Length: 82
Image (cartoon, rainbow, N blue to C red):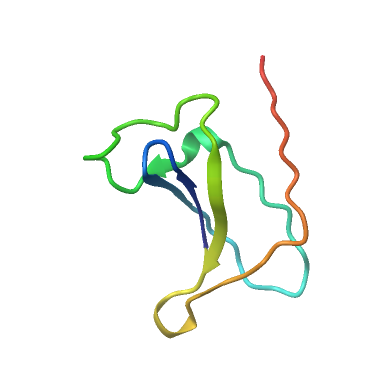
């Protein structure tokens, strides 16, 4: 599975691969936005700058013939700073 979002000001997609085993139970997925890296490092080499507006947040799964995406009932965003 992977998570991807688009930063319109930079015109760059940022992506993070996740490993989740298939099963009947719901799972909580926790990720650090700093871990999402640009798809096209020629356009932008680093992490998304603080305060960047995020558009088109997507969750995608599968490989080859099983590829797909899905809608999420809710997303909880928590900012934790030391």
